[in-house]
Image 1 (tube, protein in one colour):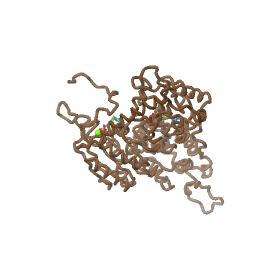
Image 2: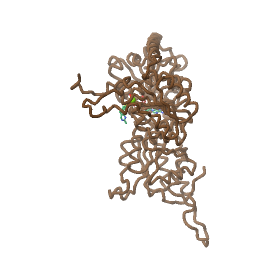
Image 3: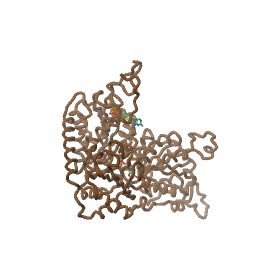
Image 4: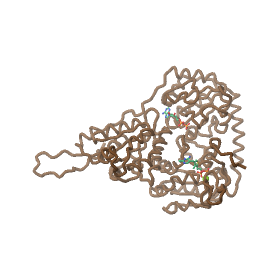
Length: 583
Ligand code: ADP
Ligand code: TPW
Ligand code: MG
């Protein structure tokens, strides 16, 4: 590895007998430590005290993607972590920049994405005495409860160890966000270059395999064998694990119907005969044994109980997860299988052998009948051409775009725009669908789109509600600046959920409503990208195909009927609403 040893920092006296040793400094040690661990791309926003770090990173051959707001840079780093199964890194300035990045760090932790947030910080002595430094904040203390681990480095000789610890903490066990605090003074500290080099640590086996106990595997197989109506739920942990062939073999050898969680779509193609995505309600309600693979029984799965899951006590859950504390988090797990998904699934396959009984035919027939019934209802909705477009008409054409370009990356946020796209657009390859995840957070769109393009080099289709887009919309400049192959489709229904609410007093617009007839496409044009206003499915299809073929940054303002959406999309049941004053 070529080390970025700093040029000699002190003038040399020509009479000196022995030349001074070459020196390195904090800037270069951070760069060398990251590069040594394979981190070559940084997402961030420059400023005191990390401006020069960014410059030097670039000079040392790293890719430094500079954003307009740290939250978007942080989201980019987080999703790079998901895509690569290695930490994505975000670099921010102190206090406000740090706080802007912190939402992304917390979101990464919540979603189990490996990420490292590196923030510059003010002088410890002043911060600790609260004497009012420039951008003073005790960042380490604030980050701690929101991430998996948090470290601060005070001495240049500790940078190597700190980066190694941050890396390992982010990816080992259940992945998550790690905070690394680098006070301004650290960067200019010097040390002997060779000593510096020796202080660096290349992390060996950062995410060690975690082999499940044989008894846990046997218990799981015993339960699975008794099932009359088995179901497999694939979560984004299964996608993250990159054990794609093993997961496919488990599904196919068992013959069990499966449903993918949102970001697990494409792990097996959604068109797979065993996909029960189109019969989701039925299989969750009626299954008797459910095998969870990298999916938590959180709100997205109705906590494993309630009417979604049918009669109380009608289910047995088997769960594969790397985090032992996840077991029994909401309901009893009769067969916990703790380990990494690759090792667990391989062990299950070995235990199943090759004469595992076929899944009960009556159950498969019931599931298939429901799938067909729902699929034909959906096809009729997608084919209806309306003007202005409704969600189904617009999403029907985007479904064909992904079918024809299965290797494209898909980013998706919004309420109706999210829920309906998730159901309608089939995915064909693993880790292609990136969305709002566990928190249902708005604002991931442009950060995810930038990282998807940067990390994979594939075309990106970002399907965005008009509200959702607004959270990170300024990054269209970033997309243009780096000339990324990103096509953004803004589903412009003039508001949050719908554009038809009114202010009962008549003073303002309703809180859910935006400027009517807004032209988001003009935003892209402002920075040299392509903007298109699409009012019909045909126009939309043409514009998207053109964008995906050309790779030019494009924003299509898709005009959607403001009355088409429903409040909160498909999670309206979580939305408390006052009954007082309702007519
Ligand atoms: P979804 O939202 O798709 O249902 P979740 O984020 O709720 O998925 O669950 C992902 C789960 O996967 C987490 O509980 C996490 O601990 C687990 N996980 C992540 N990586 C691995 C891995 N390599 N092996 C096993 N489990 C993993
Ligand atoms: C960080 C609350 C959930 S969905 C949504 C908001 C503001 C926007 C829905 O409107 P959009 O989609 O995008 O136009 P559509 O198709 O239904 O019209 N702040 C954060 N996260 C969340 N989830 C919210 C607010 C919310
Ligand atoms: Mg909207």
